[in-house]
Amino acid sequence: MRSPTTHHTRHLVIGSGLAGLYYALEVAERGPVTLLTKLQRDDSNTNWAQGGISAVFASDDSLAHHVEDTLQVGAGLCHLDMVQHAVELGPALVRRLVDTYGVRFDTNGADKHVDFALGREGGHSHRRVVHHRDSTGAEIQRALIAAAIAHPNITLIEHYTVIDLLSWSKVDGSRGCFGVYALDNRSGQVEAFVSPITVLATGGAGRVYRFTSNPPVATGDGVAMAYRIGASVANLEFMQFHPTCLYHPEEQTFLISEALRGEGGVLRRRDGSDLMAGRHPLGSLAPRDVVAREIDAELKRSGSRCVFLDMTHLDGAFLVDRFPAIFHRCKELDIDLRTQPIPVVPAAHYMCGGVVVDHHGSTGIPGLLAIGEVAMSGLHGACRLASNSLLEAVVLAHGAASEGERDGRAPPARVDPWNEGAAVDSDEAVMVTANWEEVRALMWNFVGIVRSDKRLDRARRRIDLLREEISEYYWRFRVTRDVVELRNIALCGHLIIECARRRKESRGLHFNLDYPALDPELARDTVIDKRSGPA
Image 1 (cartoon, rainbow, N blue to C red):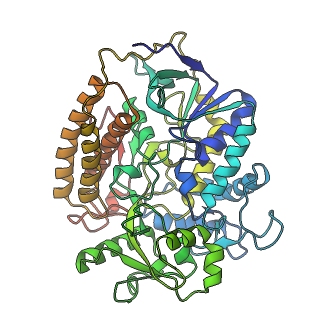
Image 2: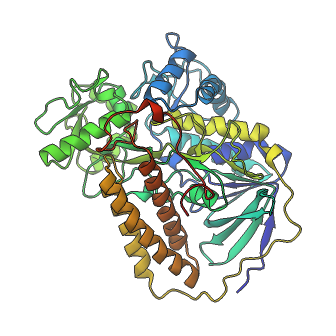
Image 3: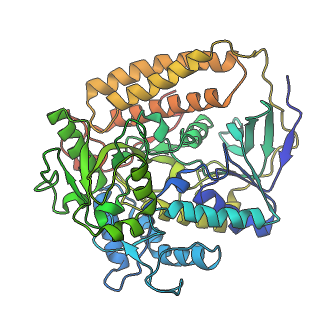
């Protein structure tokens, strides 16, 4: 069956989080924008973000302090020019979110334009986290979706899973992107969306791991698709594991924001002793890589299933007002954070690597931009400073909207419709489920918080076999969302393993038992593409 449907637009955006929505709104005055999202419009990592967006507003803070904190946490791999660029733009872009798009950040008074109520999180030397209680991402998503829906030049289409990028290449080595093939999840029809500019704002890849704070849509789609058409990807060994996700048999993916530790929460062992005492000068507010490894080591040493975040020494009324969503979710599970420590464990949280881009989201492939978590801009280095994620998303979206059209190329006059060949409906869906579980288990067990060469080699051998099985299934049966995502998480897992195998040291979020020390000679990005890297 051949799909007859081809859509044309001036700007094609894949993903409905902060990066995708902000870009769409900024370019909509120049022409039509089509925004595709895999499930519903608010299914994104942005919507799940609790903490906030980091920017310098306090009188005792400075841009230099923010730069220094970012570089310190990034463990020698941050790109200084990108760090300075993002930190300098941060305050103005936060103001734009408020003044232009109606985002409601918490303030210390009635005037929304002055005196933000600033939080502090791990690795920050000052209070600089602008927030909306403990649901900052949801508030940003609410405001930007409302603005996008109201804009006559933006078409937001839900329940479309992008399968692959439309691309061209020539014998002289030139190449380009001009849109996507996307699956209508409800009808099963595959359609072509054609545009001179395609923007990947697809988020991260937390679902590559068994335990994650990410929503179901975070399956590394953008990284996988960009890599398949020849884009460079980098630093995928640096997967950030958030130290504190709720440990509960009925709730595996609920994030317990770092902002709780910013307000004085203390991580404790089962016996009540301070887990981080003597481990780092910042104690429980140490950078995430440090805290996650300490928790992981404690769980392995003691055999405990979790550690505890203790807020009971703080004012109960303040906790309810500052963290209402976390308080009510915990209460639903019979945990009162005012009187009981919260059981927590680490979980995969944020992809610090991604598709290599410049300040404007350019990937090096004409017509293809990448912004937000899917991108590797150099801001985060080997470990992301807390709340610099939303900052990077809006900075790259701003840059792409300002300069990205220079990358645009006229699409071909004729676009081949999707051709499924001899594919048939699957009668072996159990294989998809089994492979999903196996990929995520092997990544958690062998490519997690602590690694070794033996674990990485075992993971590489097994994931290569799984990719062969998945490829055979993909070409034999009609595509479904599950199969597309499985293909992508398997490729992302493969790329994470390959990056980790190449880094013969321990730095930031990558800790290898065989190379426990940092090697100054390896202070460089791990860059892979199809021409120089694995198949």
